[in-house]
Image 1 (tube, rainbow, N blue to C red):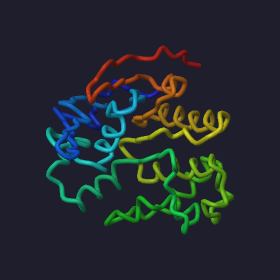
Image 2 (cartoon, rainbow, N blue to C red):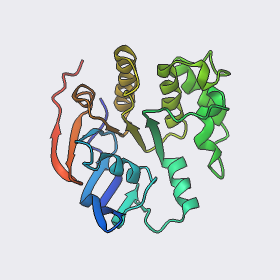
Image 3 (cartoon, rainbow, N blue to C red):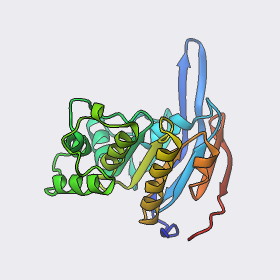
Length: 238
């Protein structure tokens, strides 16, 4: 079982708002939102369309910036960082798993796994070894030279998970990661997330599916850009 009581704050949002202007209208996708995610926690984020789930994930992933407030990744304030510095934070501290996989079609499996390291000024010397080990772990060690179009959806998502892990991130962000998969493949992907959580990884998974949310330790439910509820799942440990 992961140590979820270490107290180390991985990601912290302090009075964060994200405002979009659409003509004369103002939409507050996040509204004075404060929350912390600690090392080893496994969160599911739920809410109806327009509740702020995607905006929260984009800010956590440094893909978007708050209109107001402060977001810190492992204590580093991100609001004042320029685009290059923000890209460096993403490549070192964050791992992404998307519903649509977001693999680069011109690259093979090994190259796709290595992508986050391409953006580091001083990538680790063992980067390729790391990528090969991760490919083995997700069951694709014998398909390193295949391109995404030669893989099933489940295999592509496994590549995406390996890519998310290659930089040993502080925070793994998953956006409807099983949404395009059949039920059996989805269970296999969720089992991988369970393993990562057991190893102490911090995971934030956005989902609209209760069965998927039930795999997480805790659930954060949003409504109109605010926290509607926070609760712990009752899970029977093997």
